[in-house]
Image (tube, rainbow, N blue to C red; front, side, top):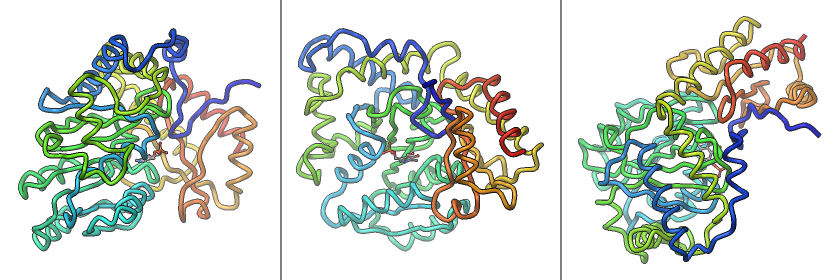
Length: 363
Ligand SMILES: Cc1ncc(COP(=O)(O)O)c(C=O)c1O
């Protein structure tokens, strides 16, 4: 078997030094060596989000959802409300968590792929002064849209709200500045734009907000943000046994992302790659879900197959050529939409090669 080329939005292909980091000798998570590793990695996560020391990052062993569920299940006292802005599958997943924990909700729903109206968000904030937290997804992966985080952050500041942003498919792929964007909590996971493995989720939170949390506010045992924060502050450890081995790989992936031009350089490479892919796909006459390319992320392109082509067949044919791509989610699947992602170890030449293959498969 040869390794598939992953043009899907996570897991991604990792750099060789990330893979070899997994072979590090085994250590105990209650050892000084782990504490140093944890402190190093969490400092670098702060840097990824341009956070200063008024923020603290923690690492949760779990998928991206575990970081989202940790925040949402930990930051509300009984009766406190969340205003959720959603316009796609991953906004809907936040809704699922909110409903599961019975958090009082002001639902600011938009059509999938509709750009959220800031006026409507502001109206809802005015009508619901008791909202504690505004929640939204940074990069709505199901459509490839970048949501207006900066503008919502300004409202969060104006109305004195906490602002929680699911950055799962945005961290290290878009230029995020938690301070400038007034973000209180940002979540993500290693196996996306950062170029690490799935299973290393992380949260960067404002210390001022974190200091107000108590473990009793947390609605579950494992994903309890107050516990994670206190343990991190006390001794750079985690409350339970973490996926220690993945920490080595996460730490190297963070070095890779912050080295040589930093996150800006990585975002520039992702932009160049998606630019090449989009130009090529357009030349083949394919149509995108999002008409305004300014609203498209640097890493995900949502494309419709030409009329009459079968999506399952197309994805299988690409698979046979060694390329993994995703079928569109929700209603888009039946409309013949597929998604091409350029996260992780993908470079301009890989994108040119991918275009040749897609052209051949479509012919
Ligand atoms: C924006 C966003 N949020 C949440 C998730 C869920 O992440 P996971 O599948 O790692 O739990 C994803 C996964 O693609 C995502 O793109």
